[in-house]
Image (cartoon, rainbow, N blue to C red; front, side, top):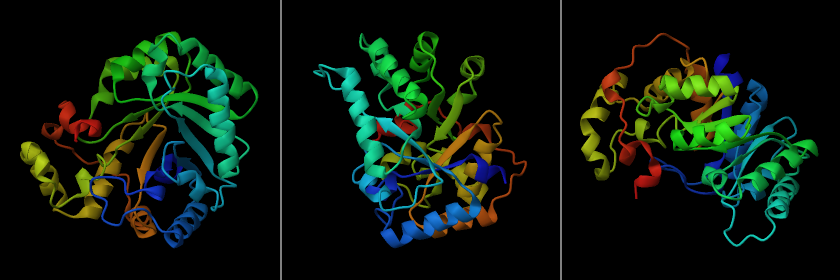
Length: 288
């Protein structure tokens, strides 16, 4: 199934209550064991995490990652870092030990603006050295700003770009961006498929009332059904053939099971009037 091949499990919920729609808090160990049983059964082999995710590496250490390809992210480089090369190497090696892996599928920069600073060449060289030593297979950047990503990729050869993409935030579909990423031959990994859960909610926080008309169109399309909303949100992303991986987070194993059992890759017409370029909505960093 196309979903199984492209699915990458997000681990933000493993160590903390993540997402505006999260009702259950962080996932309990029993649920994680069930989740990983499903991953093994369905041959889902990718997991997305970050060195910054609270307690996540400690939790991952207790799970069987033998056949799982892990993508992790390096936090912002400290301003007063005297030896950037050593700092990055220590972060990666320490993280591998914590999760009991020999190598990462990829390491991404969580703060791509580091690659627009005077430290950029040192950072890039450090990542390349880690590739040469086989601690990581691929390198990439995690972005919100597409213009910045073009500036970075014009100067440096990254393997992966991780970016937001969903039925409301369709910036990735801009032909200028997409053609450029194709030319650079980067893997495109997308996150925020559910807009951090907003697309799945029946009742949203009052701070989103400004966009009530937009959500009303979406809710009507899905008959206010949470599972249907999730399936349509995923189907929208998978319609884009340029997507290599889609990152989805789950609060429990039943959510993953329901999606895998009910998902159908079908032709659905998505209304264009629910797309928005308003950064106050599509960038969760602006919600608080």
